[in-house]
Length: 221
Ligand SMILES: [Zn+2]
Image (cartoon, rainbow, N blue to C red):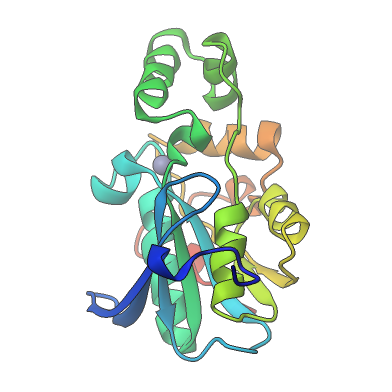
């Protein structure tokens, strides 16, 4: 078994043209969680330092249907665009991470509690007897090792995600904020992520920007 822990028969690679650009897709079946995950890779990553990386947790409602109650879909698009602008990078799309790992049915149950009882994203999970975050980021670490990345600049507002990757042997040389404009549907969710989950979301304190102002979408620097 190679150092990264993924068997050759559990990986397949091909090119994939998307609206953002053409990436190399690396599909892999993780030896620990058994899920099939996907990495989108642009440019050479082997032995490279400071590779721009997004580790994105699956969110069917946000990523596919562009739901406004979270910012996942916008973060996914912005991260891919940033990788294309940079000309090099990796987006790791982790399956089984729905609702911070509680699953889709449970996530929608938390939406009921949020809508009907005003609970936030944390209390609505704990009210159902569920953990606030049970995501495992080790599959992302394994595929980054498979890709030969030496160190990453992580696009994230979540300091816990950096710690999780570092605990799994990935060197995080920097963090690139991925700030999405708040709207009336996601402002409570984003505020709870800042106040209760420790995400770094300084833009929530600023006056709402005009939708045409893309300042929040700027990454890097
Ligand atoms: Zn989401």
